[in-house]
Image 1 (cartoon, helix red, strand yellow):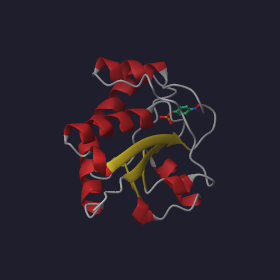
Image 2: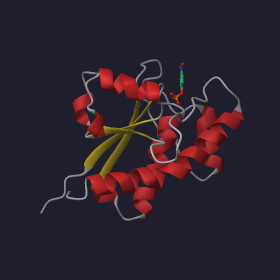
Image 3: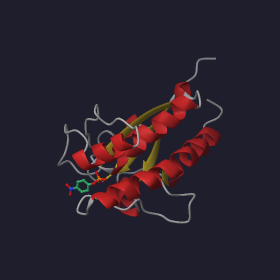
Image 4: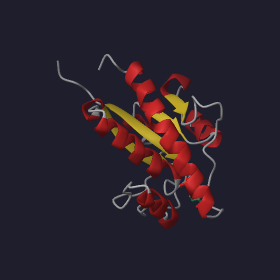
Length: 158
Ligand code: 4NP
């Protein structure tokens, strides 16, 4: 049987700080686990300000210091016109989740990145210092495998 990859979108506000890291960490997990054929991973922001730009240099530098490469990132926006391109959504915080709901995404097609660790939001680091980016990376690194295992169970019939 031909396998159809599940198209997953990681969503934050600007698509330059949190969701590019989430995408890269989850892609690394999927590659390491030999699950690449199951998933097609992308990221996007609910805002349009940074469309076409690379990752925020602070986010890229933090990721690089942990061996994760964001150099090929190109920011895009998720909106009501393109939402049908993805099967499932992983929101970085409750605001992103609510925005996706307003775009028409059903609860069964999305989760919060921190769904499993007793917290909810991956805090927005944009207006803070370097420590905020390190904190975000650690949160995302901790949750990447949990999220992908959750999705693997949900879509294991693929
Ligand atoms: P992100 O961070 O949502 O993690 O990419 C932000 C990036 C840009 C802005 C806010 C948050 N901004 O206001 O431009």
